[in-house]
Image (cartoon, rainbow, N blue to C red):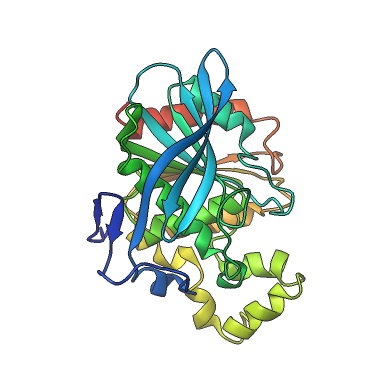
Length: 312
């Protein structure tokens, strides 16, 4: 597998030495690869209570030029504890509240010795606004996730293990995770996805955004129809850049997922295999999008995966 030359240092990933994203987001993956990603200033802004096993905190950090909010569950004790960054699935930003999503995972991770850092993407909760994000096929969310890892890496919070950071993405957040992994190789030590959206951008557009006016009109104006401009849509699809990935991926998907088709997960696995990326796809027969039945089994596999790939 080809390992891309990159540097993770003091909250920065340098890929080509070009300027940071700023307010003008690159609108394709190749363009975004030519930019500097920054993340810093991870801080606790409010204590929110907790349980006998962990404490819960509102946090903020910097991702590029934006301040991003989130929720952090911290195991009780001194640590240092490895960190799992959580990239949530789609929730309408108009109704989203900080830390919404991953309720089971936030609790389980903190009870089992991991700091769970749940990201509120831009335009969500108290995070800064970025009106261009939907028109750039949500590449900004990938920047927010990368920024979270870099803020962890450069953190001075004494309970954080800055050398061990994993990523867990669900549904839309799974797609965001794959974008982050190709845009900033090596920022995460391992990645997990649940019921991920497709790594082919046209699949996602056709299912959800095509009928969402005026966003669909703006996207089509920028990139054209997938069938008419396949080169542009290729540059929006993370699977075409999996050769950049350097860390292992564990993916879960239900065969009866009526939101994100199981065939999307299988196509992603084939692309990962072709690129030489260490990966495993676990299919749960008859399971739907929310894993109500097999979640307990899946989290046992997550436990083993994190134990193998993080030095905790």
